[in-house]
Image (cartoon, rainbow, N blue to C red; front, side, top):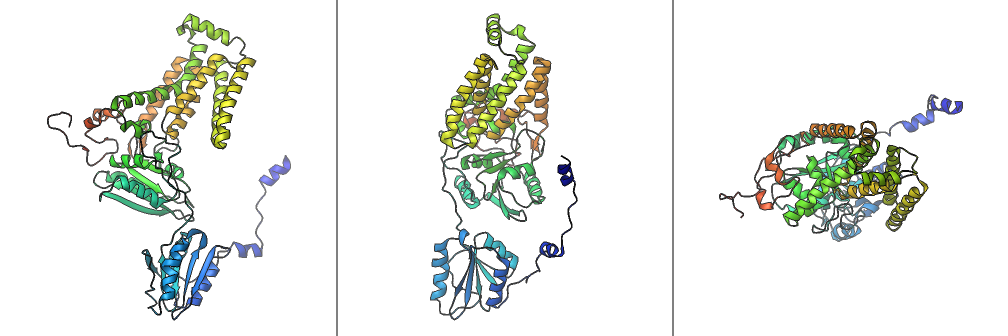
Length: 512
């Protein structure tokens, strides 16, 4: 124990002279590309040390040249057919105008731009006698095909999901909004990963004040790298300590395009298969793309079902604890006798009983997600049956508790957004604690605190509780119920769009 503490508080030894030399940054190289080809190639080899996939391809002829690229990030067919073959066939050419057939050509004399291009899958052509290098667009890194989204399944929506390539994700959104008002602002963040962000919006609809705030938060990021969209959302959200998500992360291009049409902003993070949508409201997490592909009566019923499922997932275990511990007089006598008989052999308090089962449920949920799909389904089904039956037989939990936990699990799966479902599952435990201490009164107090917190939240400076707080009756047509589409003439006012109307209003007030 003492040796562990001594090692923990031991001072860091000073580095030796050799270590000091190793820790020092390398000597600065030349800032600009040289006119001599040999010196450029020498500097490339010095700069890209321990890089086995680096290729330096010499092209001999009247005008010597060399093509530098990373073999794992480039398209070999494009390099051979569009660059190497035209250079070999050309007898002579000016050093600043190499005869390449690729369309993406950019000249630079800055070595930092050359290194950035090579690490991003582009090829760099050095020509003898030219003080500028040609950066050629030959990207061809490994990527997967466009597939059906995994987390956001849809019955009638498109079966295309975002992939890990930012340019393809932008193209998927462009297919839904082929308009000249769809604008894209790009940002390069992170010092090591050189992550590229693309903010997509409709210039004549989106609020420029929200864009200014979003740009400011992106530019203030000082980080080595951003791997996925979830990291970006945590860095730029308004309330870091709130359990509720303040941005929507979607895998569906039709969902992203729908939000952009409403005046919101879509942030495409290169190398991430999800797109960030903001600003959003609490109601946005309960809306699905299927709601607008079916009859409005059916869509309204399903929308109400989702809100009821959220209520069950959040309050059902707490209500069980409160009724059994404090307010058992409100339970019908026959049901109360049945519950008492079921709990006769249970040695734990209802709170501990519910806590054990809820934790077990979360463990099985995580196990089902992390394991391979065939094994995960088997573990979830067999494990749930065996654990539930064994727990009841041994008297650890009661039959009614198993029903409560199963109902809670099913209800949590109905919520269409995964992040909101995770927040509701997390808040279930504080509500159980409030019910354990104060009964139904504690549940009411907890619900009021949660409601006040929801109304105080903001997403990029806009009201998170809109259209209920502040109250906007015109937006209630697409909240708890989904009215017919031809009645929803105006856009939601939550994102503060510049153009309110999305349909031409009928002067007679009739269905068009």
